[in-house]
Length: 404
Image (tube, rainbow, N blue to C red; front, side, top):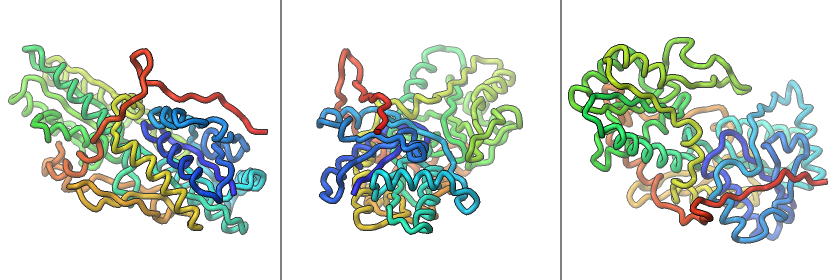
């Protein structure tokens, strides 16, 4: 049979490593012939916009370069499939593509919303009597997928956030005048990435002195009080804040995407103005923005290795006849760090979120407890031996090729 793989959602450092994992494992399976890639996620399946990956990934060097390349080499999308009970027109287009290409398994690499696609498509194919297997391969820097211990892409983003936070701390401490630096980190409803900046505490670094995440109730009055208390102890106060903490209407964009998610940004600047008015000192706000998800030069080897491995595990799972499943990590030990990969019901993951446990927060809700460090630290370990040229990492790039 033939298989197809697609990528969806926001870019990460590790999503291409999962694509490599699917491809490499497919080459080992004698039952699999062609390995197709769909451009721009599920949109590529709807439009029959595919490429034969064997024509693109010809050598081991190609695979090694792709593995270290951030973002989605096949492109991405944020396309929400409708309820097929109400409108199955796009599903019928997908079925035409599957039949034309003789595809027996579809692998979708993505986050919460992508797993919604996995679940819906699986249900439709079962309804129309097709035995094409549909498997989700997890991906998101937000680390907010249910059931799985963590998600590919998160470890590298966490490593970047913590390293950048440390550099900001060094930069902010050189002057004799008091200052406040507010670092805005991605995280809509879950504060995993913002919380990961606290791994610096394991190195004896007291900063970030304050960490605010969506899981804790945010109060502007308490924020100013917290900063004032830290300024009494430290000359340069550095604060980490999730972009999704609750603030007054109008601070953040009111726009909403197809999945009902608000576009969030601006919390750092809002708190900056508040702190400047209150304290009259030097206050800066820094939004890490897209750098935190695609900075592959500082990726976690553990993250990249696991991302490839879970893509391979997904292919093995599909070859056993499994469908409507998402591959997940189950942690066995923190020391030594040990995980296993296994399938979970897509219905239990799609459109659901996982939040920081309560014991990961300090009682005051304004920092991260030591309990969280054992969870975060194994995920950011190791560095890749990057292929470099002219002093910078080499990236794998493809032209937009369409099959006849």
